[in-house]
Image 1 (cartoon, rainbow, N blue to C red):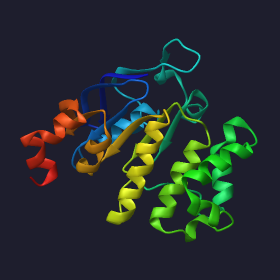
Image 2 (image 1 turned 90 degrees about the horizontal axis):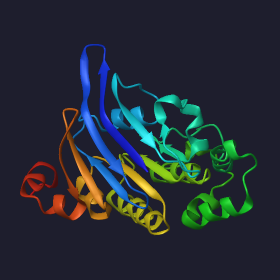
Image 3 (image 1 turned 180 degrees about the vertical axis):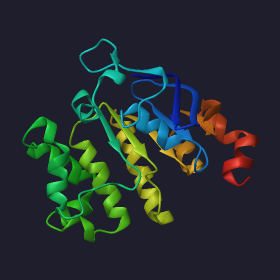
Image 4 (image 1 turned 60 degrees about the horizontal axis):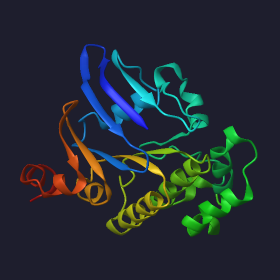
Length: 237
């Protein structure tokens, strides 16, 4: 569904992303793991068009078939092509209600369907309880749920999550990852950028390890979780 091929990204003279390549197949959970500053978020921003690569290519297979060069798609048109990005830090509309935030998630599809809201509320009952509440007054975990729910309102074929566990308590982290696993089971393809390598590898079909802007290791989630090198570097083993 998604193929990233030898992309290079620079911030002025800083070579931030160095020949990064990976792919995401339909129905998979693919994780990008690595320490803070490894280039995970920059890679995701390059896929969604917020940053343009100096070289390399990013191709995506939309629902209507064919191969789409994402470099030719404006960032604001990505959602309509089936890609949804839940950014680091959530980026919800703080002054709007929970319901208004969810309705914004369906903006490219027109008026949100009742069944779409029911689906989101079914996955996130707490959001239904707080649907008239101003989003800025929610807890961190509730805001993360809202950011994910807003993305789901667009019916994404590929859901890209950037550090969904950041700043959350261990109990909430488990809840968020349970929801990600449920989305996977329901058929959603997921690209997960996550610093919490232990949780990410538990649910990932495959994973790539980024260090200093390079992919240094790849394999199944189970293979990487069992790797002595990975355990020492990221799992405290």
